[in-house]
Image (cartoon, rainbow, N blue to C red):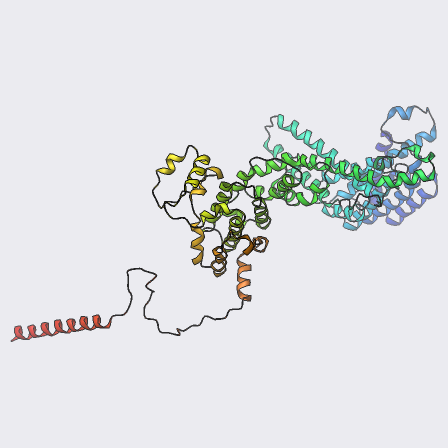
Length: 611
């Protein structure tokens, strides 16, 4: 076979320069009409290439597809096995079919190259995709040809050029079929496991060439981007009940052994038993799909994800992945690792980790300590701050939360209100309001004068802050006992402090903040007279939303550009105690008379001297 290919190479180059489009059509018609023109096959194959003009490639593609489609059931399984080719002896029909199989494999590889090539136009790519998927449908005696599909996905994810258009086509036209989704998960798992093992072996070797290392890192990132794009576009199963009907691309679910798990003995069963098995096949398909979905995502999350892919995965993990996993607890290592990173990544991992803790029984002892460390000014300007504030309010909702922990969060938020934007101050007031209402034991923080600590507070503080009591006792009265730099909420001494920062918000330069702070003046211990504030109403706030609310707000008294009553002083006496700024007329008269007397005396003295 090698000699046949080598003899055709010069002919290919000559043909590309000499054959016209009409002659190419004639070659295709001759190939389809008679077996005597089988030598036209290699010539037509030479035009299925990214370097060929699109009309030539399209005409050759259509002719070859029409030629190979009826012959696929009679072709041998593979042309790579030499033993199988030698077993039938010198049978000319078998040799001919084996040669056709090799040409078909070459045709499939040419189609895949044409599909992923950046030189191919979009219309040609769509036709090539339909041809490949048609071979996937009929190339394995009517069953799904997973080998061709795996080669196709392998070329897609390893392509260094943009293949998003091709994946969008695949998703819009073929991901609706359950078997295409099923084998997509299988191929993704194989590809990611292969790359993971290769990445581990590469890390064990010392590579002195920095260019090769940077090139491999870039290709790895492109591979991860492509795999994530495929996984994010595969739709999920809408239901797994007995009435669910799944549409197959290759055959019905009862004939597909790999997806439905039915055996060949099923054909010998009575018709009623076949119907019962068809009813159960929906549940079996759903179970197998969940298993392949789990394996594909877990193997993908083991890869060294780039930062942008990492963030995209964390954003959609709690909605697009966790509900469909067979065992969501398998994500605990990935999520706890992400939560320990800190910064924006920890904020984005909080949603999924909270679901695992509340719905699947995950135990994470350092959860509140890590959550406390996320309360920094940059969090109030992050992109996903709205979801974080809602989860923060949910995490602090439990009545079993210790008093020192609730006090630490309330005090930390109170201190942050002095340095965050006005929208952040509104969220902080809402969170503190809910904390004081849920935990009456920390209402002592609202008003505490110097030396007003009760014996109970002292005893609780000594139990919590053992080893730091000598330092606290040496502090002067009037100083805040809260340690804002402490990352451990237990050691922050919040129970010895007060929420004095909230009182400063009464004079905030932003009117909505100063008005909203009045909600804390109610007696929050009386739960019947108060209600919790919905944090979601304030979590998405910004300067634009505050300005818009103020513009739409109807005011009873409009500020004017003149004084209704003439002012008597520049400042009021309450602003500067002990100072007065009133205008004293008698004092000014005395000063003017003194100045005139001095002026008259000096003029008289000049007259005496002159005389």
